[in-house]
Length: 172
Image (cartoon, rainbow, N blue to C red; front, side, top):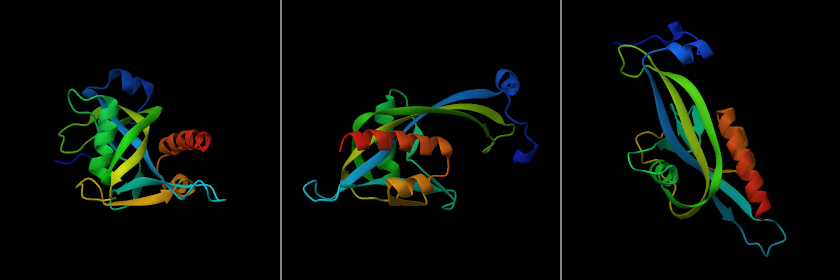
């Protein structure tokens, strides 16, 4: 049985307070970056980030995923970036928490209202090769910081990337 999302109510403050069933989800992800170039060159290092595509490559986003039992938010971010993008990373710093609400209708007989919290981190790539081997990912690619701002689908993730750019610019 499939739920027609067009008939679901708009998520208002009243709906957030009263709707049942409702659940809270916690996820984490990161702005995974690498530096290309030499600091001794006259030109500054170029920084590239790894983005993933989902929904038949219609949605470009930062790699992220659900926190597993007993896992910290940082551990989740590092694991998810490796699973979804194929690269290993190390933590540089916390960036921002994004919160949003959505209707979960996937294989449900009734819609569930979800309050999701996603912690994002600045993660320096230490190894591995870009790979879209995860069943959840349609494509993965390198983007410059400027390209990433244009490519990301969601404004909240563009905001996270702008925070990362501020940190990376300060570290040059």
